[in-house]
Image 1 (tube, each protein chain N blue to C red):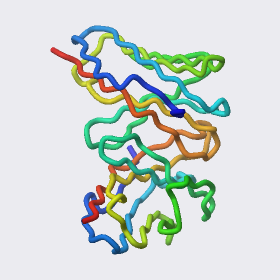
Image 2: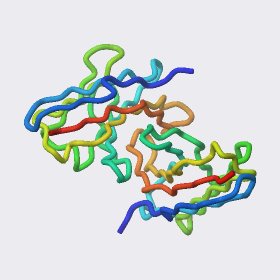
Image 3: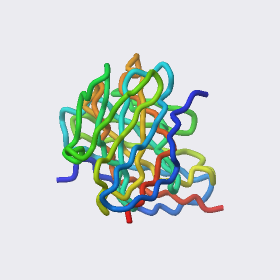
Image 4: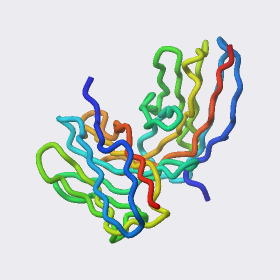
Length: 110
Length: 115
């Protein structure tokens, strides 16, 4: 069973649209949750941590459902620069290593 | 803005040779990590390091791998006898261990090619 599952996409979305990504994780001991973005052949960059009550950072909103072991990311008013692969990431917390999903590829079209 | 740096950006080596990948974590961070990403696959955790010792390692991190913090700034990953399947992008990451306890920041990576 895959530890972190994501729809690989690609999602082709017109500029200005709203797009949503989902992710499920299998380890119920997971305590920390994140979205990272990764551009082609670059390092993962932290987009936002995901808190139990849900949180928003500008155009980005993240939600966590611990009971369903489900994480989501919503991007509003998408920009061309949002084109990237979005990685759902979980951890047991503390100093533990991160467990990555394979990512969802997003293409914003002009 | 402080960032993690890694050298070299690209390393080409012959199978069976030893390689050392170098990282300079963010200066006030206390937790250090190595990850790898084989082309087209997901990022995989290798090892975490805190207080001058390994705190966690994955099953990928076998006896051919070792890590070291030789001085106050560098953090290295050594692969003793490289195999073809070690070809991957290797990312170093560091975290502060503060309020945002497990947020980790990644370096630009070293692309390792084993021939």
